[in-house]
Length: 248
Image (cartoon, rainbow, N blue to C red; front, side, top):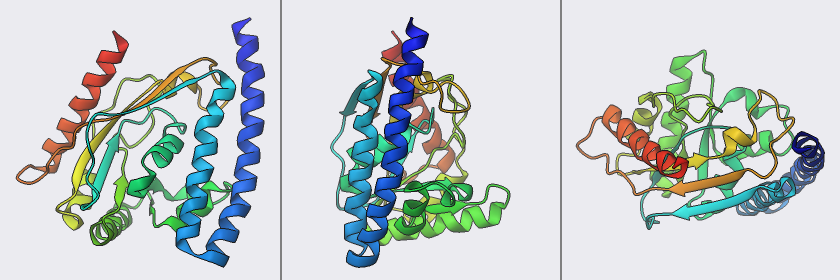
């Protein structure tokens, strides 16, 4: 019976999800071309609000917890663990005040209504994972951008999704490139839990209904005087502690 419910609610949510992609693609194009970047930012916020709370259609619970006060007068580098593509909308919506810009693989910048357009227009770092030099230069460009504007960057140090919930070691290369250009950025881990169970397959069907989903923003790490590898390990350890807490 539960499996039947998974298929039924997945169909409902994915139909809703597809409609949001189409509707908000048009909304973004109109906002950007007629009213500029601020209007486009608002359209992206609204888009991710709809994607995040649409998860209720699957019976999911959504919890966002911020265990620290975040600064608005300096750049921030968010370093979440990565379990699923469903990690991302909630980060954009709940942390919209900090204008999060993502480090993303370049393939996502084409072919996905709404999402690809935002990646191209928002200033995200679009990296070619087969070209290390291009990737580092693009991440460095993003670092310079957040430094100059007190924005935030989001980088997944695992490099890829881990649906099992067992984190891969955090790589420090991308973080180092960001910090080189944004030396006074605060590094802030985010512990994400449940999205791997919610979307356990390589595709998006079926989703697992009634999953508990949570995003926990943890106290920042001051990178001054620390090697990027040390900062990456501290971020991973902080996230692991929360994942262990919630698993008990």
